[in-house]
Image (tube, rainbow, N blue to C red; front, side, top):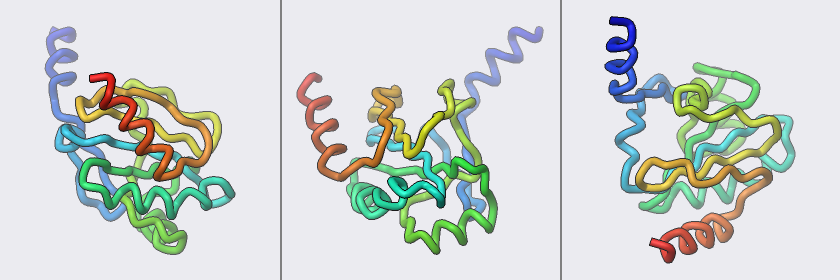
Length: 143
C-alpha cells in the first residue's frame, strides 16, 4: 500500500510558492524554456547578471525563476528582490529536491530546463541574454 501511495503522490502536480505567496504549478511552464537561477545578495556576479536575467524573462518563450541561496523567504524575500531590482519571479523555497536536482554549491548557478520539462544543463557563473539565446538556438537546431 505504501508503494501505491508513493506512486500516486509522484503523479501529483508539483506546485511551488512564489515570494508573494502565489502558487506556481510547474506543469504550467511546459512549452517554454525555464531558467532556475540561484543567487544571493552577497554574490557580486549574481548582482551583475540580474539585468540580463530581467531581459531574458521578458521573452515570451523563457521564464526565469529565482531561488535565494541563503533561504530567505516570505515578505523578506519579496522586499530583498525589490531592493535588488529583480523583476522575475522568486520562489519561496528551493525546488531542487522536488525536481530531483542537487542544490548548487557555487553561485550564481542556473538550471536550464527545456520546453518539454527536461533538465538540459546546469550553468555556473553569470549568464547573459546572448549566452542563453545561443544555447536555445543550438538546442532548437538539434531537434
